[in-house]
Image (cartoon, rainbow, N blue to C red; front, side, top):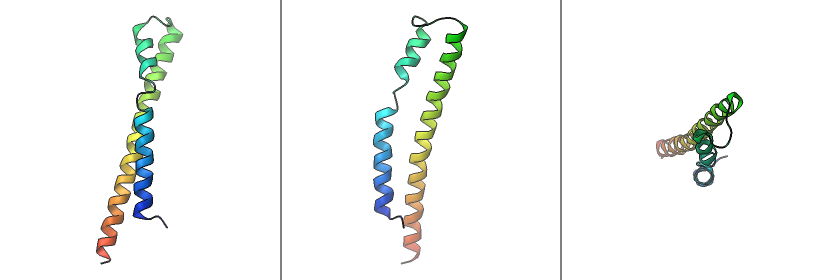
Length: 83
């Protein structure tokens, strides 16, 4: 059974990973946007994919952190109801 401590530990680990990787694609996006690294239609498609992947990564990181927060809050609420 998951405990509040487990949820807090998971939230801390995910937050640390999020902080570590949040900007991992920024430099590549910047370089592609500058147009000095690679040009042409294939480069444009790659740049669009890169931006989409960065957005998806940000969304996934936010979603899992929010889900853990909600789970911890629900767990706390359920525990208070049982008192």
